Image: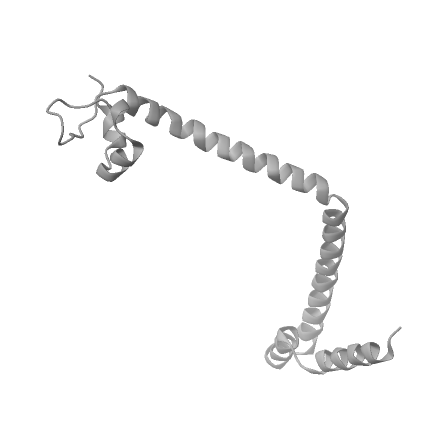
Length: 137
């Protein structure tokens, strides 16, 4: 083991132990306002809570590390399913807009063009893609 690294670790640990944190502040304020018995109950509760938190973190990270490839595959397939669902939700509006007459008029022709002759950019510019879908003639 590297002695410089271990010495730095010990120094940082001592500093973190000496500097009071929010739990120490809670214990001091509880002891000052409600007495020693309440302060000792607060110490017991915060110690148990910290132990449970550390155990949950250790077990959770160990499980995630052990099953990282499975989790990545599940996340990838979930994302693909979500994108497919978004496409399925958008498809009826797009198809209905392309099959119905569109209220957008082109300058070059006097008759209303169908949405097939328009680009998606034209419908977006006019913000009438949903209007096109609702106008079935």
